[in-house]
Image (cartoon, rainbow, N blue to C red; front, side, top):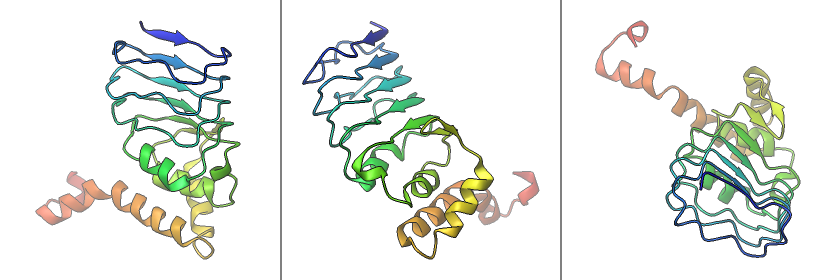
Length: 175
């Protein structure tokens, strides 16, 4: 099984996918799911569509190292920090759709997502302009201490290779 499209089927529980390790695309959109599927080891999964369900929290996606597209729009996600904790290690993620969730209605949400997930190329169907994102994050520093912390952390992570070169005595241009 490589592609599973089970959207619009009124599913209330996610299917058991432990015997589908070759799965590349999983579409469970427009159902009645109250939990996200358990994806303990799906190394080939690149697309996960859970749009328009009743999911309050996202299960771990650490078993999906190649995940590039995630759509969890129109769910019941309430904790932005829990969502970020789930997504922060998935550096392959290029496209994220999280609109219309209780946790994504705040003004600082976009800045927070972009600073914690600097590798994103698209957020809520909008291409990301890195310079505008950086300026927006900087403007929110005075009103959002958590966004400030996230921005600083993202900048440290982005500069980690350069910092390692400086510590080892290598010239920055040689990195």
